[in-house]
Length: 123
Image (cartoon, rainbow, N blue to C red; front, side, top):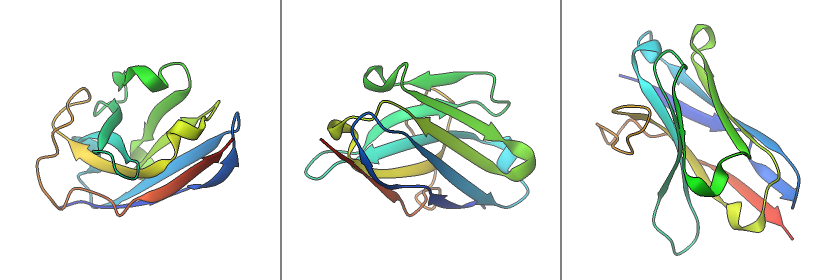
């Protein structure tokens, strides 16, 4: 079982940067692919970025390519997402989750989600 806790969200001006962190409990973190998702008000949850178990493979949705970078530190049981050049349309609650693979938006268990962290980008 893995428990996930996100942090690093906040209010930032357009063009600014934030770094999200997702700390995982449990010894098996390094056995899982991980992903970041986001959900804006009135919209469906969106798969934003994914990373493989080793960190060697990554996936990004088109709208964040070149601006967001996902990474992980298996020794610290943590996955990160560096977000640069933020835009107002990036405003959402951001969630990390265990995924079936780095390019898959499928989360195998309902309890493999974090609680979310709010990111608000002002114009």
